[in-house]
Length: 545
Image 1 (cartoon, rainbow, N blue to C red):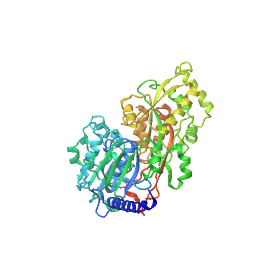
Image 2 (cartoon, helix red, strand yellow; image 1 turned 135 degrees about the vertical axis):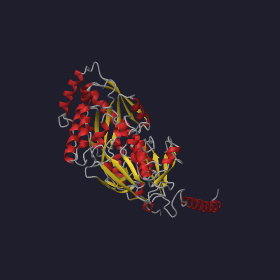
Image 3 (cartoon, rainbow, N blue to C red; image 1 turned 90 degrees about the horizontal axis):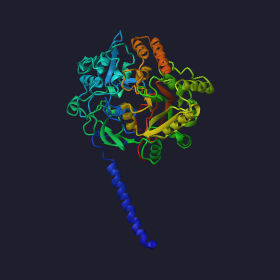
Image 4 (tube, helix red, strand yellow; image 1 turned 90 degrees about the vertical axis):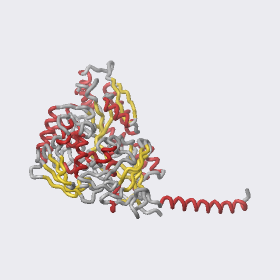
């Protein structure tokens, strides 16, 4: 084709392209269904991490699910930008002088996403549902400080005896089994969010599906494509909708950290769920202005299954395996993104608490290895007769790197043979629940800024006590701490409890997390805090040029 012939075709192509762009922009300017008149058309795209196990507030157990739920629902309280407690559906509250009763005053303008008023009875129903054995919530013991909660979970009392009442539509009264000054912060957790009772009655097993879910947060569930994404649109009935600046949020479900980074660099998402360790140096060199790193109240650990061999009733063997792990090498050579070596369970930075450590934390590695080898022999193992077991972990580059490094440390120091098995996150949770593991990878993210959120995890009757640790002394110390109103004495009891637990080695803490996110320049209002909670309602997107 000659150049002269190409010219008019090029002109036609340009006009066609211009028309296509105009149509595309016109389509983008259309407000999403359910959006407030005159609201922003911006959809924020956030990394959602692995597939959530559930978006039912009382049944969800993973941090990934709870991060999304904080956008969909709101409890009596919420968190401020620093991670401290703030008013939620309750505009105010007060505690009795003896610390056993809290009264919450609800907002008059709180509404469900279908326009129904949020009333006190919705919170009573939700908290009863949380502790009801029929619900099977892993967080049932989360509110064990409320009167009769533990007995209800154990099946000794009916759910209507829970110490939560609604004297009128705008008042929630909570009676406690023991004083708990952290109660308002605890109630910011998604598991305590209210339930829309008509929906629960009509769809008792499907209240968290698109088209069915009625929520009371700044956004409402619109779409869930398994393995791909979740879409939440702005809730025009939210009590503070006037402050929301987004039309919606799309969460991309990406379990692989490197894949998430690739999609971020390709412009498919604006906020990452995590940052891949293997590329951290490159990110720091090329994307420093978009990188956010901050302390987090989270612990990465390996858990023993204490109900089966080879680790049941073997504290010496568990100690031996812990002794030879060089946590400094893991943090500074394998991870290399600011994480701290973990020789204890509760992360540093907790209010009214001093972090505890294994008694060998400061010993030279040679001394630790010598003790470990002695304990290993006492348990009947040797290089000729090695300990063999399976370590199961979920898919992800960092999990694989850590597993290989730690297995090498065990092999070199003791001769242990470890089978490394990688599975999907949901499968790992199911395997742990069935007890079909010997050792597993997990982590715990603090639900509020108080040491009890970590101490409670290993309480013998707590639903997400994954190692199944049981210690009467540990439980007694937690109970004594719950009765103590003096914050310093309470902290001392919780510190002693942690020392008791660490001596038993029911798990292997490996490192304390830091928050790591990449945030595009067009995202406005981003903030960091130790809770790693950033509500989408606080964010906005800069106007497009």
